[in-house]
Picture (cartoon, rainbow, N blue to C red):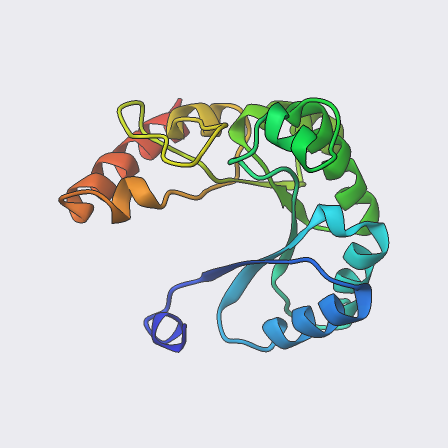
Length: 190
């Protein structure tokens, strides 16, 4: 991470903290001191008090990373949610958790692009939406259950996209990244 920060890259620490409020507050306070960390996340399923503790841990800082709450993992569909005791559809729960995150003072959420429009309506234009599980139309799903293309994610309200294996697993990662970058640029213009 120090190498990336030294090269001038902004960093999203996708650590998904999920513990008791005091522990999460300490972890977030420590992360806030790291160079060039711009985004960090916690699990919204940790609850309102845990998210508030994360927010309070950095509230007095002049500059701090944006705090995000993970709603429902993109690897989970309704069946997997039921197996772990979460009722309803991914979309319904993601919006419910986004509202809770906003109430707790989070800056935004990590959510599937499939829920981005509903979250945007529920939480407003200034609420950040980071969309993982982004795949070009031709890419393998791997372990993702709820994916979107870069174009869909942008059109549906994403502020940031997380694209991993379609680049890191490609035969030519540079070419894959450039192709995805062109798609993002075209979608951003329309």
